[in-house]
Image (cartoon, rainbow, N blue to C red; front, side, top):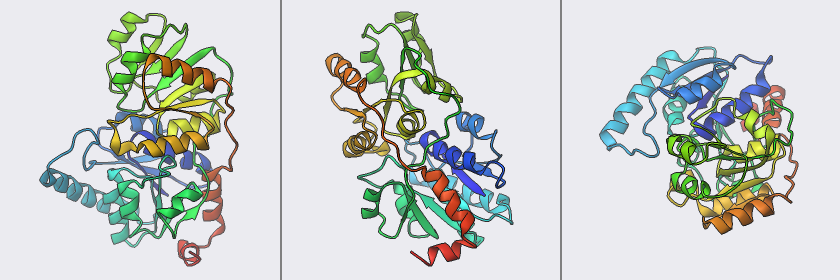
Length: 327
């Protein structure tokens, strides 16, 4: 089985599915060339094919360069996809487009997964692949408004690899690219114990201001930090799902108005409601403290395991053609 792992939360969804396939199926991942963070996370579950991403979300490219990358990624995937591949699952990001079309060329079944954090607006990749995939999988009933012919399986999140406990600290993680404007304000708070994953934001200046806090760019074993956190403050993405549903941690979901490609205000607000979390829109010291205080009294809900349901459906279906004929 092939899984695209396009970075950040997209890689998280791929890992969540791969975890449920351990001992059941051979897995390989399609990863963006040079994405060392995703590479470190997926290697423990299967092999890797590296192909060019069409463009980074924070670095738009002229169409000629995007087209060049697409052609390169398409033909590399076409040459390298295993001929005995049973299915390719796209977990999103523009990385998935070329591999999905290569699989289509080889007449391999394609499953198109929409992100669990997009309850109000579709991702561009999932919307595009909705037209060419054998079936689209969504995680919430609300997403059927965007994908009427999709199959709902429930939220997909990574398995907990550590037993949850109260470590007495707040975990702040804003994804691969970080959120400098939020960090610059949060650093002024006087909490005793805080762990911050800064992503691509340089943590060195923060370390000097708060030497008793823990800062790091990236940890492929982020689960160990989530497991001990009393509260997880994060952005719209799979980390919120993992924290709330895998580790049963109260979450604060921060809206980043500059990161439009990652989802809208409405997406963030709806996901916070789904996870019984706190939605934080206007970022200032008072609102952050208020959100943390409110989150202390929140308990995440329990939902069916969407990844397990998806795997069970695939196991019980003789062929993907049989599955798609019912929808």
